[in-house]
Image (cartoon, rainbow, N blue to C red; front, side):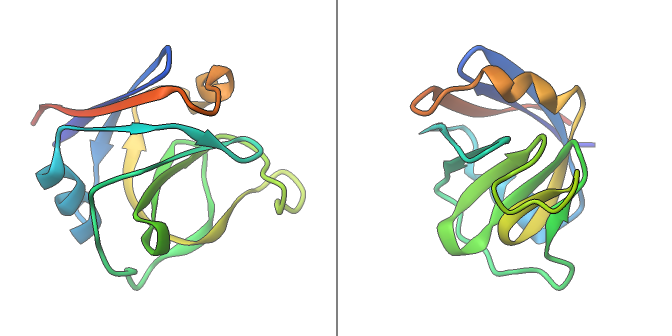
Length: 125
């Protein structure tokens, strides 16, 4: 199983990559840096990755799922309600490719602020 580390401000998350074209593209682009943005209880950041929307893309995600917004070349990690959530769901702004699963609790992203430095790197297979 391929793993990566996402350092977002003071938060470190390891994630296991799924077997998807998006996961392959992200892995091949490592390492890269970015800048965090927030939207409700979601952290997102731009990447150097360009992929197509996958057949199973969706806008409602489960805690720990790491998504890729194709139209913005952006990784999105929802950890709670966003401005368009209905009930307790985690609803992202658009259908996204799910390409990784966090190995720890994504709720620790609550401390991330807009403008925090992001580093994404390989931590092995």
